[in-house]
Amino acid sequence: MQIYWTPIQQVVQEARDTYTFKLELPADFTWEEGAHTHFALEGFNQEDKPNRTLIRHMSISTLPHEGAIGITTRVKPECSTFKSILRDMNIGDKVAIFKTHSNVPLKREGKNVYLLSSGVGIATFRPLVLSYLANGEGVPHLHSLNVDSSQNYLFSDVFASIDAFTAEFVDSRPDYYQRVETLAADKGGLFYVIGSWVVLCDR
Image 1 (cartoon, rainbow, N blue to C red):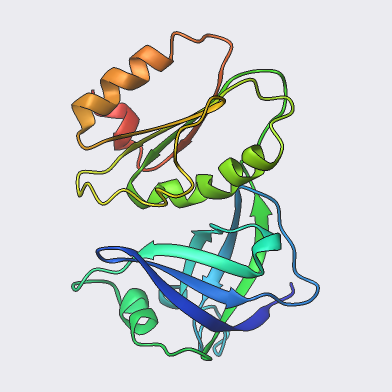
Image 2: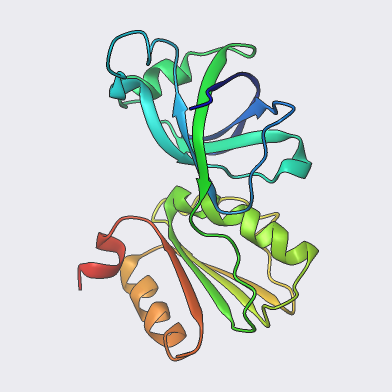
């Protein structure tokens, strides 16, 4: 297993309590849209067994051409040990990334694609939207639906509706469920879902 230790280049506040940690891009490191990685802090592998309190499974919110590995996450005042350590790190401090893989690449099968997300989960879909905007081949229409009760909607510069891509934000679960039921009328569509199971299953 190859572990990349790479420094934090920049920290961007996307919204209240939400930050993107931009990591330096190693020369031989690449990924495709929809990728996730193991993101770990110093000391995670110093013992016989990995210290799992210092490891998180994170989506990458950027594409390689942007020149940085973006990890977008919420860091609230009351947070886990992992998040509190991350919050106090400085530019130049190194973190580890390993076991990078994509579960949700953009499928170009001639079908409409629907991206359903909750809160910061929309970060997983940012690279898919960028990939689609650069090349819409094989996807007649792309639609994003995000629910976030904070109303601090993320990445509004990317998630802006145009003819072939529509972005929709709602601030309550009832509104979300209503819209999902409407979108589900497209029986041939492909649905990508990111977020807690309760987002889909508490009805």
